[in-house]
Image 1 (cartoon, rainbow, N blue to C red):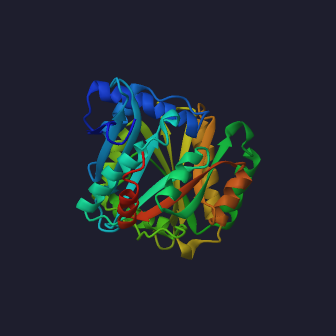
Image 2: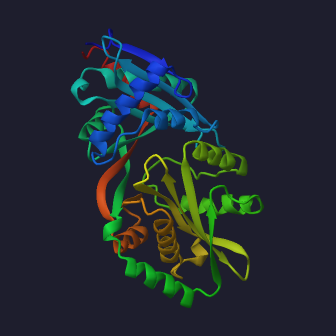
Image 3: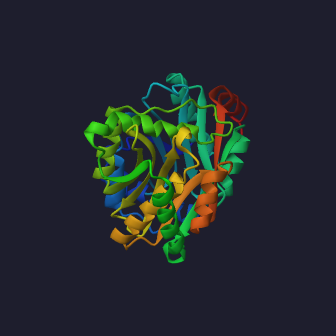
Length: 353
């Protein structure tokens, strides 16, 4: 098989055919086993629902490589970006190839499609991920000239090993010392009256370490927030958010949010956790994390694992997670490469079989 004979086709992930969806579901489940072998397979209905409900403000272009008989997807690649006011210079890129089909030019052929799309859209930078559990991803990133810009520790907590007495201690300590703050919860969609303030609060995530990523701050508008919520609900995801409010000013001071998917009830995904800088060092982060775990695990006893990701340089959050009993699961690497450099790589490798 060479790059001149492969069966590479575009695919509209939001409205593919039944055959395409079935093949893509099988492909993704195979790749999932390599990346996170203990995770259960996703059902076809679950994946189709997820793909068909990607928020409208997320722009995507995707391609797949079919086996010679046209029945199996053996490689997949694509680019995407959010239509927001910032970071209009970058495109996120994802390329995956089944293990038995690697080093045959498939990744390179898919990369050429992504690079063409990025250039047409004036996106000068490609950003992608690789995982310590799949070394081939790092090898490919280095081969095309990408630079490792950020390392993130993906950590997992087994509920059976959760230090529940520590949760009780953190909640009690906060109630005794954080008298100027009150704790609350939002389940599902955020309240309309607080939506603008919530979007401003989410900006605190821009203070999280970004390593050397050439990336500007992200800012969600209320409209984009609502689009994302509708997509989550359609996918069967319940979002739980705990927040603390500064009582004297009424200002939202911090939050933590998690997602629970009815299709994967054993797993709780920890999303963002952040406290405004002026309210830090009051134990609010521990209070938020402890209160969230206590409530969700009480109301969703099906949960067996909690998974989260933090930059290796985010020592305060890693410390909280380690104290709770989270253990390192694998490392995620964020890579970036200029589209111009990708084009140079592709030009040099045109004759490589």
